[in-house]
Amino acid sequence: MKFIHIADVHLGVVPDAGKSWSEKRAADIWTTFTEVFAVAKKIKVDMVLIAGDLFHRQPLIRELREINYIFEQVPEIQVVIVAGNHDFLSVASNYRTFSFAKNVVFLKKNEIESVYFPELNTEVYGMSYWHREETSDVYDHITPKRQDAINILLAHGGDAKHIPFSPAKIIENGFDYIAAGHIHKGGVLEGMSVNPVPLDSNRKITTMQAVMAGALEPIDSNDTGEHGFWVGEITKAFGQVQFCPLRKCQYVHETIQLSSQMTNMAVQTIVKNLLANRKPYELYKIFLTGTLNADTELDLDWIRNQEAVVDVICSLRQDYDYDRLREENEQQLLGRFIAAMQSQGESEVYKKALEIGVEALLSAKLDR
Ligand SMILES: [Mn+2]
Image: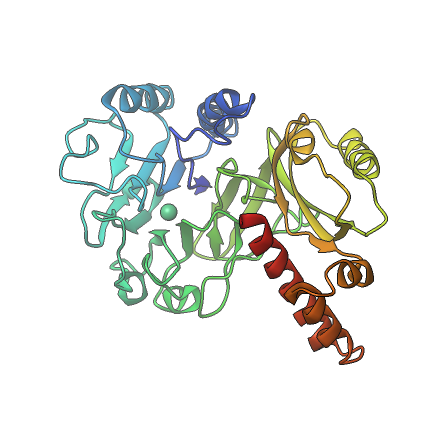
């Protein structure tokens, strides 16, 4: 039985709101989903497993018609879907009443159910979220009905508020593959808790039995690393999966360490060099750390407005000339505070107290 396993497509999301590429990313997420089905058809998989959060929020009827059109193009492929915490089956959810193509099975119940495909000797178990949170550990307590069938669990969750589960326990209970979703950083699952270990892109084939698919495309700038879909082949005797990365968009976190001597122009040069070497599909979130001279005016908006910069997180400490500040404020609290801290010697604790105290006194001064 050959399959494709995806999760957390989050159709309907508009990533990086306010950025020039935002609408394109929203459209790309739809395109990628379509492309997965083109691949499925081309490599002739038997099944596509969608492990929750296909939509970012409650789907509109016209959106369901769009995805159903895609499903209708591959009548030879079985599609099995569960709803996750983002697209949970609310009372008014369009999922409840929509009628999908014949090759689609949507496991809509709020308790474990299963569907058996005799021609593939495969049974898929799963359940849909009916609420934003589901805390019961139901996945850990299922025993497959057919010992001789290929038993697959379509699971969404893995943290405390979203069906915590133990991959090892589920495999021990008789499942041959866990097709999981929810955690956006995908990888192979092993052991008693959910901790996806990304599959080395050089080592593409593995004999693992449980996979967290990860988001098909990254959803926001914190979804770093590679994203994509998984192709697998499974029999009662063995299982193989391969990770297929997509490279339409990849978020990169980059830290720039500043020091007191640096000027605004020097920082801009570092940023320019960083971006000059970026791959065309990369988007950067830049973290500024270290110290900066209090006189230096850093133009954060300039960095923020560079092409391919999603965000700038600034956690800089200002580097004051304490001796000068002390002399200029000799008769005031600020001057006396600095003198008192400096008299304590070079200990790290007093240095820290000096930094925090001066910062606080100066900001209080500005407020008046
Ligand atoms: Mn989720």
